[in-house]
Amino acid sequence: MQRLSRFLSAFTALGLFSAVVGCSRAPEPAPQPAPVAASPARREFPEIVRSPQPPAPPQWPSLDGAAPPLTVNKSARVSVLGYHEFTKGKPANPMQVSEAQFRAQMQAIREAQIPVIGMPDFLAWRRGAKDLPNLSILITMDDGWESVHRIALPVLREFGYPFTVFLYKRFVNGGSKSMTTAEIRELMAAGATIGSHSVSHPYRKRIDAAFRKGPKSGEAFLRTEMRDSRQFLEDLFGQTVTTYAYPGGFHSPREEEFGREAGYEALFTVNPARVTWDTPAASLGRFIVIGTDPNDAAFKLAIRTRGTAAGLRMRHAAGGTTEDTAGITVSPEPDAVVANRLPLVSVQFADSAAIDPGSLVMTVAGFGRVPAVFDAGSRTFRWQVVEPLRSNECRVTVSFRRAGAVPPDTLNWRFFVDLVSAYLPEAPEQLATPEEITLPEAAEPEAIGDAASGADGAR
Image (tube, rainbow, N blue to C red; front, side):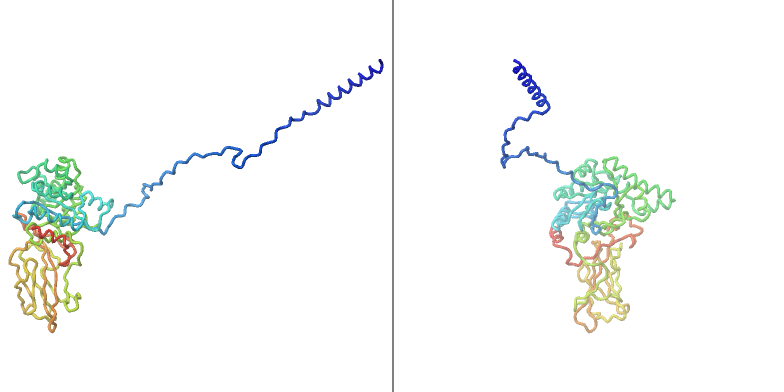
Protein backbone atom coordinates (compact mmCIF):
# COMPACT_ATOMS: atom_id res chain seq x y z
CA MET A 1 0.00 0.00 0.00
CA GLN A 2 2.76 2.24 0.91
CA ARG A 3 4.58 1.31 -2.35
CA LEU A 4 1.46 2.19 -4.48
CA SER A 5 1.19 5.57 -2.81
CA ARG A 6 4.84 6.39 -3.69
CA PHE A 7 4.28 5.30 -7.37
CA LEU A 8 1.27 7.57 -7.79
CA SER A 9 3.16 10.49 -6.31
CA ALA A 10 6.03 9.96 -8.70
CA PHE A 11 3.68 9.57 -11.69
CA THR A 12 1.84 12.78 -10.73
CA ALA A 13 5.10 14.72 -10.44
CA LEU A 14 6.23 13.51 -13.86
CA GLY A 15 2.96 14.63 -15.43
CA LEU A 16 3.26 18.10 -13.95
CA PHE A 17 6.85 18.43 -15.27
CA SER A 18 5.77 17.48 -18.74
CA ALA A 19 2.98 20.01 -18.68
CA VAL A 20 5.33 22.82 -17.60
CA VAL A 21 7.89 21.93 -20.26
CA GLY A 22 5.14 21.72 -22.88
CA CYS A 23 3.80 25.18 -22.02
CA SER A 24 7.27 26.78 -22.38
CA ARG A 25 7.77 25.63 -26.04
CA ALA A 26 5.84 26.81 -29.15
CA PRO A 27 4.16 24.05 -30.98
CA GLU A 28 5.89 23.06 -34.18
CA PRO A 29 4.01 24.11 -37.36
CA ALA A 30 2.18 21.48 -39.25
CA PRO A 31 4.10 20.21 -42.21
CA GLN A 32 3.25 22.08 -45.51
CA PRO A 33 2.87 20.36 -48.80
CA ALA A 34 5.84 20.66 -51.08
CA PRO A 35 5.49 23.64 -53.53
CA VAL A 36 4.74 22.77 -57.10
CA ALA A 37 7.45 23.92 -59.47
CA ALA A 38 6.25 26.80 -61.76
CA SER A 39 5.96 26.01 -65.42
CA PRO A 40 8.29 28.05 -67.70
CA ALA A 41 5.22 29.38 -69.64
CA ARG A 42 3.55 30.76 -66.56
CA ARG A 43 4.36 33.82 -64.42
CA GLU A 44 3.94 33.99 -60.71
CA PHE A 45 2.24 37.48 -61.07
CA PRO A 46 -0.10 38.71 -63.83
CA GLU A 47 1.44 41.00 -66.50
CA ILE A 48 0.61 44.72 -66.21
CA VAL A 49 -0.76 46.14 -69.49
CA ARG A 50 -0.29 49.92 -69.88
CA SER A 51 -3.04 52.06 -71.42
CA PRO A 52 -2.03 53.82 -74.70
CA GLN A 53 -0.95 57.46 -74.16
CA PRO A 54 -2.62 60.22 -76.28
CA PRO A 55 -0.29 61.84 -78.87
CA ALA A 56 1.42 65.05 -77.89
CA PRO A 57 -0.34 68.19 -79.19
CA PRO A 58 1.27 69.84 -82.26
CA GLN A 59 3.66 72.67 -81.58
CA TRP A 60 2.25 75.66 -83.49
CA PRO A 61 4.50 78.65 -84.19
CA SER A 62 4.18 81.60 -81.92
CA LEU A 63 1.84 84.36 -83.03
CA ASP A 64 3.34 87.04 -80.89
CA GLY A 65 5.26 90.04 -82.14
CA ALA A 66 8.50 88.06 -82.28
CA ALA A 67 7.18 85.81 -85.08
CA PRO A 68 8.86 86.55 -88.45
CA PRO A 69 6.68 88.40 -91.00
CA LEU A 70 5.51 86.88 -94.28
CA THR A 71 8.19 87.00 -96.96
CA VAL A 72 6.75 88.32 -100.23
CA ASN A 73 8.14 88.54 -103.74
CA LYS A 74 9.48 92.08 -103.90
CA SER A 75 10.65 91.47 -107.47
CA ALA A 76 7.07 90.96 -108.66
CA ARG A 77 5.53 93.39 -111.13
CA VAL A 78 1.88 94.11 -111.83
CA SER A 79 0.61 95.39 -115.17
CA VAL A 80 -2.53 97.43 -114.52
CA LEU A 81 -4.79 97.61 -117.58
CA GLY A 82 -7.07 100.63 -117.90
CA TYR A 83 -10.31 100.56 -119.93
CA HIS A 84 -13.17 103.02 -120.34
CA GLU A 85 -16.04 102.31 -122.73
CA PHE A 86 -16.91 99.27 -124.85
CA THR A 87 -18.74 98.86 -128.14
CA LYS A 88 -20.12 96.03 -130.24
CA GLY A 89 -18.86 97.56 -133.47
CA LYS A 90 -15.94 99.71 -134.59
CA PRO A 91 -14.61 102.11 -131.93
CA ALA A 92 -15.64 105.72 -132.49
CA ASN A 93 -12.86 107.20 -130.33
CA PRO A 94 -9.61 106.04 -128.68
CA MET A 95 -11.29 105.25 -125.36
CA GLN A 96 -13.75 102.76 -126.87
CA VAL A 97 -12.69 99.10 -127.17
CA SER A 98 -14.64 96.67 -129.31
CA GLU A 99 -16.08 93.52 -127.80
CA ALA A 100 -14.02 91.38 -130.21
CA GLN A 101 -10.81 93.16 -129.27
CA PHE A 102 -11.53 92.89 -125.55
CA ARG A 103 -12.27 89.16 -125.77
CA ALA A 104 -9.11 88.61 -127.83
CA GLN A 105 -7.06 90.43 -125.20
CA MET A 106 -8.51 88.34 -122.38
CA GLN A 107 -7.74 85.21 -124.43
CA ALA A 108 -4.17 86.43 -124.98
CA ILE A 109 -3.72 86.80 -121.22
CA ARG A 110 -4.97 83.25 -120.69
CA GLU A 111 -2.70 81.82 -123.38
CA ALA A 112 0.26 83.70 -121.96
CA GLN A 113 -0.61 82.09 -118.59
CA ILE A 114 -0.40 85.41 -116.77
CA PRO A 115 -2.55 85.35 -113.62
CA VAL A 116 -5.21 88.05 -113.26
CA ILE A 117 -5.51 89.28 -109.69
CA GLY A 118 -8.17 91.34 -107.94
CA MET A 119 -7.63 94.62 -106.15
CA PRO A 120 -7.73 92.97 -102.68
CA ASP A 121 -4.79 90.73 -103.64
CA PHE A 122 -2.90 93.69 -105.08
CA LEU A 123 -3.35 95.74 -101.91
CA ALA A 124 -2.41 92.79 -99.70
CA TRP A 125 0.83 92.38 -101.68
CA ARG A 126 1.62 96.06 -101.28
CA ARG A 127 1.09 95.70 -97.51
CA GLY A 128 3.37 92.67 -97.37
CA ALA A 129 0.54 90.31 -96.43
CA LYS A 130 0.30 88.27 -99.66
CA ASP A 131 2.73 86.92 -102.22
CA LEU A 132 2.41 87.42 -105.99
CA PRO A 133 4.10 85.76 -108.98
CA ASN A 134 6.72 87.61 -111.00
CA LEU A 135 4.11 89.09 -113.35
CA SER A 136 0.35 89.47 -112.92
CA ILE A 137 -2.46 91.54 -114.44
CA LEU A 138 -4.89 93.90 -112.68
CA ILE A 139 -7.92 94.97 -114.77
CA THR A 140 -9.49 98.39 -114.12
CA MET A 141 -12.26 100.39 -115.80
CA ASP A 142 -12.95 104.11 -115.40
CA ASP A 143 -16.08 106.27 -115.19
CA GLY A 144 -18.91 103.71 -115.03
CA TRP A 145 -20.15 103.38 -118.61
CA GLU A 146 -23.15 101.08 -119.02
CA SER A 147 -21.23 99.15 -121.66
CA VAL A 148 -19.06 97.76 -118.86
CA HIS A 149 -22.13 95.92 -117.58
CA ARG A 150 -23.59 95.09 -120.98
CA ILE A 151 -20.44 94.12 -122.93
CA ALA A 152 -17.40 93.68 -120.66
CA LEU A 153 -19.06 91.80 -117.79
CA PRO A 154 -20.12 88.75 -119.86
CA VAL A 155 -16.57 88.44 -121.22
CA LEU A 156 -15.02 88.73 -117.78
CA ARG A 157 -17.45 86.14 -116.44
CA GLU A 158 -16.47 83.85 -119.30
CA PHE A 159 -12.80 84.01 -118.29
CA GLY A 160 -13.43 84.27 -114.54
CA TYR A 161 -11.32 87.41 -114.18
CA PRO A 162 -11.78 89.85 -111.27
CA PHE A 163 -11.71 93.58 -112.00
CA THR A 164 -12.09 97.04 -110.48
CA VAL A 165 -14.44 99.84 -111.54
CA PHE A 166 -13.49 103.43 -110.70
CA LEU A 167 -16.73 105.43 -110.41
CA TYR A 168 -17.30 109.14 -110.14
CA LYS A 169 -20.33 110.29 -108.20
CA ARG A 170 -22.16 112.34 -110.81
CA PHE A 171 -22.03 109.53 -113.38
CA VAL A 172 -23.64 106.88 -111.15
CA ASN A 173 -27.31 106.67 -112.22
CA GLY A 174 -26.47 109.53 -114.58
CA GLY A 175 -28.43 108.47 -117.64
CA SER A 176 -28.61 105.94 -120.45
CA LYS A 177 -24.82 105.73 -120.94
CA SER A 178 -24.00 105.27 -117.24
CA MET A 179 -24.56 102.28 -114.99
CA THR A 180 -27.34 102.16 -112.44
CA THR A 181 -26.94 101.15 -108.82
CA ALA A 182 -28.46 97.74 -109.59
CA GLU A 183 -26.02 97.14 -112.45
CA ILE A 184 -23.05 98.09 -110.30
CA ARG A 185 -24.26 95.71 -107.60
CA GLU A 186 -24.36 92.97 -110.21
CA LEU A 187 -20.72 93.72 -111.05
CA MET A 188 -19.82 93.43 -107.39
CA ALA A 189 -21.61 90.09 -107.15
CA ALA A 190 -19.48 88.90 -110.07
CA GLY A 191 -16.24 89.81 -108.28
CA ALA A 192 -15.76 93.51 -109.00
CA THR A 193 -14.16 95.92 -106.55
CA ILE A 194 -15.33 99.53 -106.36
CA GLY A 195 -12.88 102.44 -106.49
CA SER A 196 -13.32 106.21 -106.49
CA HIS A 197 -12.90 108.50 -109.51
CA SER A 198 -13.85 111.83 -107.86
CA VAL A 199 -17.21 113.59 -107.62
CA SER A 200 -17.35 115.50 -110.91
CA HIS A 201 -14.31 114.20 -112.89
CA PRO A 202 -12.39 117.52 -112.81
CA TYR A 203 -9.43 118.09 -115.12
CA ARG A 204 -6.28 119.94 -114.13
CA LYS A 205 -7.61 123.27 -115.40
CA ARG A 206 -10.56 123.25 -112.97
CA ILE A 207 -8.36 122.28 -110.04
CA ASP A 208 -5.86 125.03 -110.82
CA ALA A 209 -8.70 127.55 -111.17
CA ALA A 210 -9.94 126.65 -107.69
CA PHE A 211 -6.49 127.22 -106.20
CA ARG A 212 -6.14 130.57 -107.97
CA LYS A 213 -9.04 131.77 -105.83
CA GLY A 214 -6.93 131.05 -102.77
CA PRO A 215 -5.46 128.07 -100.89
CA LYS A 216 -8.61 127.53 -98.83
CA SER A 217 -10.79 127.45 -101.94
CA GLY A 218 -8.52 124.98 -103.70
CA GLU A 219 -8.16 122.73 -100.69
CA ALA A 220 -11.92 122.67 -100.13
CA PHE A 221 -12.43 121.75 -103.79
CA LEU A 222 -10.00 118.84 -103.70
CA ARG A 223 -11.33 117.55 -100.38
CA THR A 224 -14.85 117.51 -101.77
CA GLU A 225 -13.79 115.73 -104.96
CA MET A 226 -11.66 113.08 -103.27
CA ARG A 227 -13.25 112.60 -99.84
CA ASP A 228 -16.96 112.98 -100.64
CA SER A 229 -16.74 110.59 -103.57
CA ARG A 230 -15.35 107.89 -101.32
CA GLN A 231 -18.02 108.46 -98.68
CA PHE A 232 -20.77 108.40 -101.32
CA LEU A 233 -19.65 105.04 -102.71
CA GLU A 234 -19.20 103.45 -99.29
CA ASP A 235 -22.66 104.58 -98.18
CA LEU A 236 -24.31 103.42 -101.41
CA PHE A 237 -22.66 100.03 -101.84
CA GLY A 238 -21.48 99.08 -98.35
CA GLN A 239 -17.95 98.31 -99.54
CA THR A 240 -14.84 99.98 -98.15
CA VAL A 241 -13.21 102.16 -100.81
CA THR A 242 -9.45 102.65 -100.52
CA THR A 243 -8.41 103.17 -104.16
CA TYR A 244 -8.61 106.21 -106.43
CA ALA A 245 -7.99 106.88 -110.13
CA TYR A 246 -7.00 110.45 -111.01
CA PRO A 247 -9.45 111.88 -113.60
CA GLY A 248 -7.51 112.07 -116.86
CA GLY A 249 -4.54 110.69 -114.99
CA PHE A 250 -3.26 114.14 -114.14
CA HIS A 251 -1.83 114.64 -110.68
CA SER A 252 0.85 116.48 -108.74
CA PRO A 253 2.15 116.39 -105.16
CA ARG A 254 -0.88 118.53 -104.34
CA GLU A 255 -3.41 115.87 -105.41
CA GLU A 256 -1.28 113.12 -103.90
CA GLU A 257 -1.32 114.83 -100.51
CA PHE A 258 -5.10 115.19 -100.45
CA GLY A 259 -5.50 111.62 -101.67
CA ARG A 260 -3.56 110.32 -98.69
CA GLU A 261 -5.55 112.63 -96.41
CA ALA A 262 -8.79 111.16 -97.79
CA GLY A 263 -7.64 107.68 -96.73
CA TYR A 264 -6.68 106.12 -100.09
CA GLU A 265 -3.91 103.56 -99.98
CA ALA A 266 -3.50 103.29 -103.77
CA LEU A 267 -3.91 106.06 -106.35
CA PHE A 268 -3.60 105.32 -110.07
CA THR A 269 -2.35 107.43 -112.96
CA VAL A 270 -2.32 106.75 -116.72
CA ASN A 271 1.47 106.52 -116.97
CA PRO A 272 2.39 103.37 -118.95
CA ALA A 273 4.48 101.61 -116.32
CA ARG A 274 4.31 98.38 -114.38
CA VAL A 275 3.81 98.65 -110.65
CA THR A 276 6.71 97.41 -108.57
CA TRP A 277 7.10 96.82 -104.85
CA ASP A 278 8.51 100.30 -104.26
CA THR A 279 6.36 102.30 -106.70
CA PRO A 280 4.95 105.25 -104.71
CA ALA A 281 1.39 104.46 -103.65
CA ALA A 282 0.16 107.88 -104.85
CA SER A 283 1.45 107.48 -108.42
CA LEU A 284 0.79 103.91 -109.58
CA GLY A 285 1.03 103.42 -113.33
CA ARG A 286 -1.54 101.96 -115.72
CA PHE A 287 -1.54 100.89 -119.36
CA ILE A 288 -4.57 102.64 -120.89
CA VAL A 289 -5.85 100.47 -123.74
CA ILE A 290 -6.51 102.47 -126.92
CA GLY A 291 -9.29 100.91 -128.99
CA THR A 292 -8.28 102.65 -132.23
CA ASP A 293 -4.64 101.56 -132.09
CA PRO A 294 -4.13 98.91 -134.79
CA ASN A 295 -0.90 97.75 -133.13
CA ASP A 296 -2.47 97.41 -129.68
CA ALA A 297 0.85 98.67 -128.30
CA ALA A 298 -0.26 99.45 -124.74
CA PHE A 299 -1.77 96.01 -124.24
CA LYS A 300 1.26 94.25 -125.73
CA LEU A 301 3.61 96.18 -123.48
CA ALA A 302 1.53 95.21 -120.48
CA ILE A 303 1.59 91.45 -121.13
CA ARG A 304 5.10 91.03 -122.52
CA THR A 305 7.24 88.69 -120.47
CA ARG A 306 10.73 89.58 -121.69
CA GLY A 307 12.61 92.52 -123.12
CA THR A 308 15.69 94.73 -122.84
CA ALA A 309 16.52 97.99 -121.20
CA ALA A 310 14.92 101.17 -122.49
CA GLY A 311 16.75 104.02 -124.18
CA LEU A 312 18.63 104.73 -127.35
CA ARG A 313 20.32 101.65 -128.84
CA MET A 314 22.51 101.19 -131.88
CA ARG A 315 23.48 97.82 -133.27
CA HIS A 316 26.50 97.30 -135.50
CA ALA A 317 25.41 94.87 -138.20
CA ALA A 318 28.84 93.42 -138.97
CA GLY A 319 29.44 91.89 -135.59
CA GLY A 320 25.98 92.11 -134.05
CA THR A 321 27.39 94.13 -131.16
CA THR A 322 25.89 97.19 -129.51
CA GLU A 323 27.81 100.37 -130.30
CA ASP A 324 28.14 103.60 -128.34
CA THR A 325 25.55 106.25 -129.24
CA ALA A 326 27.75 109.19 -128.25
CA GLY A 327 27.54 111.99 -130.81
CA ILE A 328 23.98 111.04 -131.85
CA THR A 329 20.95 113.08 -130.76
CA VAL A 330 17.37 112.02 -131.43
CA SER A 331 14.02 113.81 -131.11
CA PRO A 332 11.69 113.14 -129.42
CA GLU A 333 14.12 111.91 -126.81
CA PRO A 334 14.14 108.23 -125.82
CA ASP A 335 11.23 107.43 -123.48
CA ALA A 336 9.96 111.02 -123.60
CA VAL A 337 6.23 111.68 -123.20
CA VAL A 338 4.81 114.13 -125.74
CA ALA A 339 1.30 115.52 -126.23
CA ASN A 340 1.75 116.31 -129.93
CA ARG A 341 0.38 113.55 -132.14
CA LEU A 342 2.19 115.07 -135.15
CA PRO A 343 5.79 115.30 -133.85
CA LEU A 344 8.94 115.95 -135.84
CA VAL A 345 11.12 112.82 -135.71
CA SER A 346 14.81 113.45 -136.24
CA VAL A 347 18.35 112.14 -135.79
CA GLN A 348 21.31 114.50 -135.60
CA PHE A 349 24.85 113.19 -136.13
CA ALA A 350 27.97 114.83 -134.77
CA ASP A 351 30.39 116.38 -137.26
CA SER A 352 32.90 113.63 -136.50
CA ALA A 353 30.49 110.87 -137.50
CA ALA A 354 31.56 109.67 -140.93
CA ILE A 355 28.30 108.42 -142.44
CA ASP A 356 27.01 107.94 -145.97
CA PRO A 357 23.94 110.23 -146.27
CA GLY A 358 22.64 108.20 -149.21
CA SER A 359 22.34 105.11 -147.01
CA LEU A 360 20.01 106.68 -144.43
CA VAL A 361 16.63 104.94 -144.04
CA MET A 362 13.99 105.76 -141.40
CA THR A 363 11.18 103.40 -140.38
CA VAL A 364 8.38 104.49 -138.01
CA ALA A 365 6.00 102.00 -136.41
CA GLY A 366 2.59 102.20 -138.07
CA PHE A 367 3.98 103.96 -141.15
CA GLY A 368 6.77 101.71 -142.34
CA ARG A 369 9.55 103.37 -144.31
CA VAL A 370 9.01 107.15 -144.34
CA PRO A 371 10.40 109.86 -146.71
CA ALA A 372 12.82 111.38 -144.21
CA VAL A 373 15.23 114.05 -145.51
CA PHE A 374 18.89 114.62 -144.62
CA ASP A 375 20.06 118.22 -144.08
CA ALA A 376 23.81 118.40 -144.66
CA GLY A 377 24.22 121.73 -142.86
CA SER A 378 22.85 120.53 -139.52
CA ARG A 379 23.64 116.85 -140.26
CA THR A 380 20.04 116.03 -139.31
CA PHE A 381 17.90 113.27 -140.78
CA ARG A 382 14.24 114.13 -140.09
CA TRP A 383 10.61 113.43 -140.95
CA GLN A 384 7.45 115.29 -140.04
CA VAL A 385 4.63 112.91 -139.02
CA VAL A 386 1.77 113.58 -141.44
CA GLU A 387 -1.05 111.63 -139.78
CA PRO A 388 -1.90 111.72 -136.06
CA LEU A 389 -0.23 108.92 -134.14
CA ARG A 390 -2.79 106.41 -132.88
CA SER A 391 -0.60 104.42 -130.50
CA ASN A 392 0.65 105.66 -127.15
CA GLU A 393 4.10 104.30 -128.02
CA CYS A 394 6.06 105.10 -131.17
CA ARG A 395 9.18 103.17 -132.18
CA VAL A 396 11.71 104.55 -134.65
CA THR A 397 14.45 102.70 -136.52
CA VAL A 398 17.15 104.44 -138.56
CA SER A 399 19.71 102.46 -140.54
CA PHE A 400 22.84 103.90 -142.18
CA ARG A 401 26.30 102.97 -143.40
CA ARG A 402 29.54 104.39 -142.17
CA ALA A 403 31.96 105.70 -144.75
CA GLY A 404 33.92 102.80 -146.18
CA ALA A 405 31.73 100.16 -144.52
CA VAL A 406 29.37 97.85 -146.37
CA PRO A 407 27.01 96.49 -143.68
CA PRO A 408 24.61 99.09 -142.20
CA ASP A 409 24.24 100.06 -138.58
CA THR A 410 20.80 100.28 -136.94
CA LEU A 411 19.61 102.92 -134.48
CA ASN A 412 16.49 102.20 -132.36
CA TRP A 413 14.52 104.23 -129.82
CA ARG A 414 10.97 104.92 -128.72
CA PHE A 415 8.88 107.72 -127.29
CA PHE A 416 5.38 107.93 -125.84
CA VAL A 417 2.33 109.95 -126.86
CA ASP A 418 -0.21 111.11 -124.28
CA LEU A 419 -3.30 110.02 -126.18
CA VAL A 420 -5.51 110.55 -123.16
CA SER A 421 -4.96 114.30 -123.29
CA ALA A 422 -6.13 114.33 -126.91
CA TYR A 423 -9.31 112.54 -125.85
CA LEU A 424 -10.14 115.08 -123.15
CA PRO A 425 -12.50 117.94 -124.04
CA GLU A 426 -10.00 120.42 -122.60
CA ALA A 427 -6.29 120.13 -123.28
CA PRO A 428 -4.20 119.83 -120.09
CA GLU A 429 -2.00 122.73 -119.15
CA GLN A 430 0.93 120.42 -118.46
CA LEU A 431 1.98 116.80 -118.78
CA ALA A 432 3.39 114.70 -116.02
CA THR A 433 7.04 115.46 -115.41
CA PRO A 434 9.71 112.81 -116.09
CA GLU A 435 10.16 112.45 -112.31
CA GLU A 436 6.50 111.43 -112.01
CA ILE A 437 6.75 108.83 -114.77
CA THR A 438 8.39 105.45 -114.49
CA LEU A 439 8.40 104.08 -117.98
CA PRO A 440 8.37 100.32 -118.63
CA GLU A 441 11.31 98.45 -119.95
CA ALA A 442 11.65 98.39 -123.70
CA ALA A 443 10.83 95.21 -125.56
CA GLU A 444 12.51 93.95 -128.67
CA PRO A 445 10.18 93.52 -131.66
CA GLU A 446 10.21 89.76 -131.18
CA ALA A 447 9.50 90.09 -127.44
CA ILE A 448 5.76 90.23 -128.00
CA GLY A 449 4.81 86.60 -127.57
CA ASP A 450 2.47 84.43 -129.58
CA ALA A 451 -0.31 85.16 -127.11
CA ALA A 452 -0.47 88.75 -128.28
CA SER A 453 -0.56 87.73 -131.94
CA GLY A 454 -3.77 85.91 -131.17
CA ALA A 455 -5.30 89.21 -130.15
CA ASP A 456 -4.18 90.82 -133.39
CA GLY A 457 -5.66 88.09 -135.50
CA ALA A 458 -9.05 88.47 -133.89
CA ARG A 459 -9.48 92.06 -135.04
